[in-house]
Amino acid sequence: APGTSGEAHPGAGGETHQVAGGDVATLTTAQGAPVADDQNTLRYGPRGPALMEDFHFREKIFHFDHERIPERVVHARGYGAHGYFELTDSLQDVTRADIFQRVGERTPAFVRFSTVAGAKGSFDLARDVRGFAVKFYTQEGNWDLVGNNIPVFFIQDAIKFPDMVHAVKPAPDRDFPQAQSAHDNFWDFVSLTPESFHMIMWVMSDRAIPRSFRFMEGFGVHTFRFLDARNRSTFVKFHWKPKMRLQSVVWNEAVKINGADPDFHRRDLWDAITSGDFPEWELGVQLFDDAFAEKFAFDVLDPTKLIPEEEIPVRIVGRLVLDRVVDNFFAETEQVAFCTQNVPPGIDFSNDPLLQGRNFSYLDTQVKRLGSPNFTHIPINAPKCPMAHFQQDGHMAMRNPIGRANYEPNSWGAAGGPREDPIRGFRSFAAEETGPKVRLRPESFADHYSQARQFVISQTPIERKHIGDAITFELSKVERPEIRARVVSHLRHVDEDLARTVANGLGLKLPEPAKAARPVIADLPPSDALSIVRNG
Ligand code: HEM
Image (cartoon, rainbow, N blue to C red):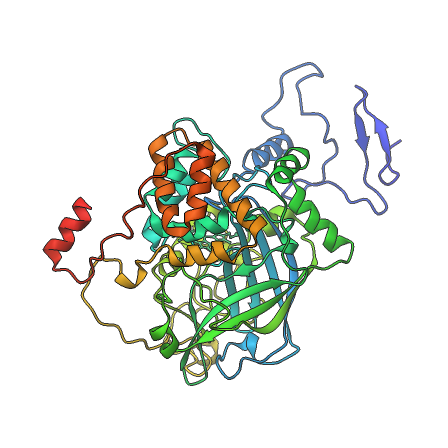
């Protein structure tokens, strides 16, 4: 008989009924009405038609029908965990950011690792860039450091991001290939976008098939600014260094692992954290001033370039520890919304044109993905510091202004809600900008090969061999011979040995080197510049 906690008993048709009682909660509808039978719809006679009146059935199916939300347009497959950041070296001298003031203080953090190109249900060991996105819940607002495991990017200007992502995702007519790079469209885009070659060398290296998330570095990629109490600026690049150092698998292992266990990376993170073996990274910063930026061989605003650690050493300032898995994947990992524009006072942007575009893109896409501008009300996205503002209403509003005031200035004194704080409040760096309104790539962004070459020659012989093998393998999947040849024509600027290895591997006659760089048009009169832009 029903009544004992959790006890199962058969129904009239042999179906299992488990009943509430004792410690076992009563099942209810979303409206809270207790449910007596969750196994059978309401019917007119045991063999008769189902009744519309069955609100429990209709609510249950209705909600199920709406369970899916759009996956992220990139970085769809990811895995998250909670932890904390602990400051080990104060940065008070260069930034007023609260998180960097007091040594020993811990700030809660949430991290989501991801692949970029694959769909939500793809496999973990794709040859791909890995996202390394960190949300710090600081006392002066959330700071999102939305990075990757590679310190540079494919493109220099955010206006190319949709093209790049379209090219890397499955082709629109056939919807394959699903894998990152074995792809005519992808290599076509790359071969016509020489600025991508530095990043391509990293993506073809062992870095793109990491052993696990725990063995990856992370990078903020762009140059950001730190601002001190007097709003003086220091440029900064962010680095994550894994305590367990770097490890990768080789390609044949990656292929086997993907077949045997497509969840290899997420399982590794889950197992490590739940067994108490908490993954850890050091946070490092490269700090530099205008004088260094002026004399550096590349433009510090160009996201396809890094600053060698030999020139600006990485100063370790803290550690990130992941010590708690999520309670619910969807609520936390899927609904978390990172955005490069989420910065607290003391951290500011540079003019990197990729960063400036990202600052628009994330918020925009998240309104679509999460369905409402109120996604900051979801606990994983909500700041953990005091907050008060006059934003209101919209779908799912859970934090409307309290009382009569929903604007300021107002006459309602202390009852009138929050006010500006000129001392603690966020202030942008007062950068002085001049120049005509133009669409021109600066000449200082034009060297696309030097750092690609530095990367290749910095690798050990076996790592270099892996790069050659990877490019040969990937290009062997490209059907159009002119695309293969065009890629090799760029490789000749990167490294002649590498170009020859790939050409031999593909049975290709070594092509002429590509035209070294796009014409430098910044200094030309507009009519000549226009003709170059139009005619190449
Ligand atoms: C998502 C990194 C460039 C648009 C992500 C994520 C990471 C990331 C880590 C996943 C966030 C998560 O786990 O939820 C980067 C890095 C870039 C870069 C390091 C270059 C340095 C861009 C650019 C754009 C862009 C140039 C667009 C102009 C997006 C979008 C998402 C995304 C739309 C999906 C966000 C969401 O639905 O929540 N990116 N990205 N990214 N990124 Fe980027």
